[in-house]
Figure 1 (cartoon, rainbow over the protein chains, first blue to last red):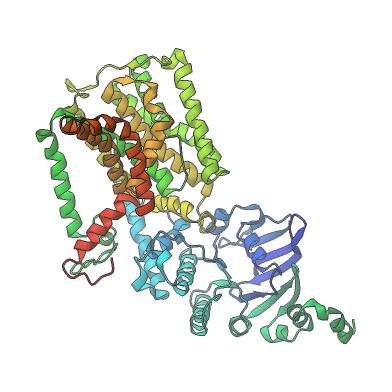
Figure 2 (figure 1 turned 30 degrees about the vertical axis):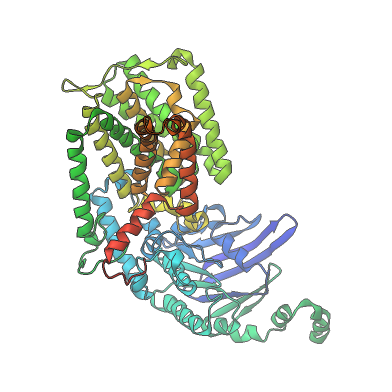
Length: 269
Length: 352
């Protein structure tokens, strides 16, 4: 059963079409990979889902924790986050001058209460909330093995660790669905492997639905339950990793459109 | 924050304290003792400077909440202080409210005005926002000097001296206690704010606003709250000036005031409460020190002494440039370096 339903999504920037009537579904509890050549519209999909872009046409519906359907295409990013949609970015977007702990505490923002006054006076309720959520954050720190970095300023961390912190921050939101934009970009083989392991743990142990974009086909094929392939803002293939791998349309999209005509002749269409 | 040998926290609460380490508490105790003893040994001249520092600390922390912590550049500090000062003064003069009530209301009014002038921040960033707040400054300055029926125009407004239990509060000695109380209260409030939810949201908006929105921070609301919180304290600083001097004139709240306050938080340290205090101390003392140096040199080197008053602005500018070049994180960072050095002294194995 789908937790996220995208229908006929169209997004244009001036004359450039990023998404052209895209429809896809994400099922509850699955690990879905979103792949495609550069400029296929993968990140645009994530940006639409998390509310950073507003599509000109189409709908995005999330089945929330309350069982009701929420029209994400009408909501602001912070409202979408409150519904349990968390994400990471292709170019790590952390709060660089804050510590790892503070970054993760921000992940708890939607679950906490408290404004300027209760914070400034640090009254009983706020104090208790801070401590209680610190406990939740420490669990994430434990889960991601970030203990030694807890009080380090994020801007000073190594690249691979920043990726982990960003994922930790998204996890601190206690998400229903986690969107990962190229979580292994710029990593070496070893780091990629450990990141892949984390992603699987997130899905299996914490029961989070995951949508991941990545260019590393090996990683994608290893960990994903289902793959959706985009090209030019359209879905060109969908299915289990093995089915997709051999799909002529996918091979064609990846090998380039110079071969389009020959492929079309070869496939007899 | 670095760990200290031999300090173990077994509960999150103690780890999350404002002064989690014994050394910090001892330092604070020393400072508090100094502050409490100071007025008994200092003469009226130094007491007056201390009072100016207390007021500037409140104003600088207020500005730092907006500029340093939330990343919204404001050139409207003078305007907001003016709103605080005039509101406090006029409420007492025209409505006959007691000074304490007037000051509290002035803070609230300034907070609202700040929120209003913060509206452009929803669309504008950086330099563009700076220009928008400059407009606020100009509008308020024009209002002060031209809305004669209310503000008295370019004429000064004279307030009755504030008194508490029959003690006149605008004497240097009496005001000192009020000033210290307000400055300490502001510092404590800000320190608490930035270790809790909303304060973190302020900083998140400064560091990376898109990521902040995706993690669930309502950016518009947060920015406006930052303007409101900041202006509240800036208004307090303005109201304090009004009651300390018991005279309100528009010259105190010009664009130059805005720039002096920006200099304070840059020299002191953006996004730092202790830096706001350091900046307030340095920028308040600098002109006084130059003047004193001039007097001291009057007999030995009259040529230099005569030049010094003119050099004041230049020295002011040079100090800011030197800080921007050599320590953009300000006095707060320098103080941190000193602490780090002694932290492991004499075994300096840790990279500072």
